[in-house]
Structure formats: C-alpha cells, structure tokens
Amino acid sequence: MSVTEPAPVAPPTTAHEGILRRQTLRESAARTYARSLPIVPVRARGLTIEGADGRRYLDCLSGAGTLALGHNHPVVLEAIRKVIDSGAPLHVLDLATPVKDAFTTELFATLPRRLAENARIQFCGPAGTDAVEAAFKLVRAATGRTGLLAFTGAYHGMTTGALAASGGATDVRVTRLPFPQDYRCPFGTGGERGAALAARWTEHLLDDRKGGVPAPAGMIVEPVQGEGGVNPAPDGWLRRMRAITEDRSIPLIADEVQTGVGRTGAFWAVDHSGIEPDVMVLSKAIGGSLPLAVIVYRAELDLWQPGAHAGTFRGNQLAMAAGAATLAFVRENQLADRAAVLGSRMLARLRELRAHHPGIGDVRGRGLMIGLELVDPERAPLPAEAGDPTPAPPPDPALALAVQQECLRRGLIVELGGRYEAVVRLLPPLTLTDEQADAVVDRLADALAAAERSPHRRTTAGSTT
Image 1: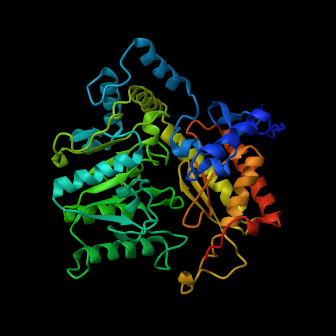
Image 2: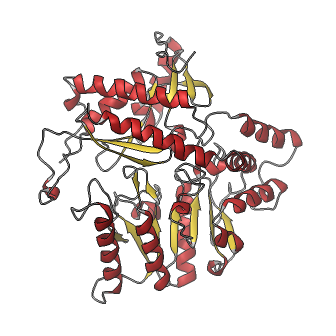
C-alpha cells in the first residue's frame, strides 16, 4: 500500500476489543500512551505499524524517539540474531564481553572529539532516568557539592532526582534557570536578545552572594527540550552556558536521551553548538530499540567508589549489539545529515500551513524533532504575557488533542507535549523517505482542518489557565 493512500478501515475485532478492555482493567492508572492511542500493534516495519484490527499507521512517535531506524530494521534484527545464535550469555552484570567492547568502541567513535579522548562510561539501569540519577551522583561525588542547576520546561525522567530537576517539579530542591524561547520568551523579547537576557540572569544569580543558590555540583540541560514543547536551545546560548560553567568549575551535563543519534540533524545535538559537555546522558536510540542507558564523562570526574551506582540489568547484551549496529548504520549512512535536510523540508511545509490555519501559533524544531504549538487566536494572551508587546495567543490543548485524535483516524500516530500539552510533536525515524514525509504532512494537515471544524473540541481538554 502506498503511504499516500488512506489507511484501510476495518471494524474492530472481538480479540482487539478484548485486549484493550483487559488492559484497562489490569494496568495501572499511570499508563499514558495507551489512553490516547487505543491500538494493539501486532506487526511493524520502518515507519509503519499494523494493528490487530487490520489498520496501518504511520508512526511518528517512534517509541518516544527510541527507534532511530524505525521498527524492526534489518541491521538491528541481524545484530540481535547474531548474539542469540552465538550462544553468548545474555546476562553478565557489568562483566566485560566482546559485545560490550564493540558497542563502547562504536559509541566513543561518535562522541565530541575531546570528550572521547578522555572519557569514561558507566552502564546504568535500562532507563534514561537512571542515567540522569547516575550523572547527578557522579558530579556530587566529584565536586563535594550538592546543589543542581536545571531549566524551566525541562524533562529528565520520572525517578526522584530526575523528576526534581524537571519542569513539573513541586517539591523543588534544584535552582531553576530560564530556558530561552522565541515564541514564549520569559523576557518578552525572543531571539538573540531573549537568549542573552537568560544567560545574563544565570550568570548574575550564580555570582550573587545573596542569591540563595547553594554551590552547584552541576548544570543539566537538554540541547532541545522535547517534552517541554520542542524548544531548541540557541547555539550561542549553549556556548555561553558552557563558558559560565567552565569559568566556575561547574560540570555541565547534556541530557541527550531524546536528541541523540542523529535525531536533530547532527549525531549529538551538542554538535550544533560545538560545545563539549563534561557529562553526556544517553539512552533511547543508543539501544537500537532495546533498553539501554549510559553516561559518558570526563575521566577527571571518575572519583566515585566501586558500587556507587549499580544495577542488575546494566549488561543488556542484546541492546548493546542492536545499539552498536544502529550507531554504525546512522554514522556510515550519514543519516544525521539526511535528518537535517528532510527536517528542514518538513518544517517549511508546516510553516506554509500557518497562513491557512490560525490555530498554528508556532512551528519549530531541529532535524526530525518537530513541534507545532496550537493556540486559540480568539482569546486574550495569558496574564503572564500581558506586558509583551507582541504576545502569543494562549495555547489550545483541546485543539491539540482533537488534532491527535483526527491524526489517528487518518492512520498517523503523533504525540503531544509542551507546558499545556498543546504542542503536536513529530519524531519520525531517520529512515523516513521523501514520500513518507509528504504523507505525514498531508495527513497532519487534513487532521488539523478536521479538528478546527469540530464543534466539540473545546470540551475535550481542560482549561489553559
């Protein structure tokens, strides 16, 4: 079936409905994706998922950015089969193995040069949030300090320390710094001026003896905020953060869990700015679709004691094999460059839609990490933005939810994010073809038009205030 054809519609089967019903009855109330995506995947390849009801979907969620090569890529499957067929142990704790050695060698070949020349790696539990916790423990052990610096809108995971450094934290033990945005600039200016003010505020706060900031053990930053609404950090601002932290002997932690392995149009998102962080937090795509998380960091920070951070499943051999194959394929086939070109093309097409859809407030992203912030142009700006000379309309989460539902009806899977869940997010695999990219934008445009016509969409989500 061509990706430009409408997805076939089949009546749901009894088995399909039964699986969904049992999931609702048995799984916790904390489940997330299953609520907005009531499908039962049974087969998948590349961009396409087939559900138990016979429908096919273009998957622009990609395991929340995990599937750099899409579903079941041949090089990933071959790497997994090779390990299984070899008789190698699948569980090794943190023992050395040929599979681990090959993965580490391939990973180090992709890192920023100066970091790779003097790096250490810690294999963590299989989730990115555990790697964030490890990074925090590492810099605290190395510096003897306890404070942490993080940014508004951040998302670093769901464990205690990672959640405390994220934007939605309520019990805050982390100093929060302004993250620059063009569309909703905290200073009401946007652009280079807004980024300069954000950097100036950070520098002032750190040097203010009465600023109330505990001596920081580290600063953690996402080069592109994903869950925060697809907000790329300006390259100049990132370089300023690197200089600020370096001048004050504060380790800089780059959270590349979602931005890594070519996603943003460079192998690592920090490559755009040319900075070399002290610590990099890596997960998602580095496991080639299987659970894997690591931190890599400057050898000078390697001061913790044996067992300071451990985990029973830090030796996932299948994930290391799949990850090494993925890293090599992205590198050898220059998929980061491909993501930059195709992402720019998709962004240009999506920006053209703004002239016909006033509900599109902003289109932004980097590479194949793309977001559309949906707004209600008929409502007054949010109170916090009332002093802005050109305030953005308030976000419209109801419209975003309606667009997501209309996308699903058209066989397109998208995710929502941002401060108010009003940003429609696209994370297609790096193997996306030109034809598939056009089909994604076409279906999204159709879904947006249908959602705007819906008379009930304003009752499908909560208020933005």
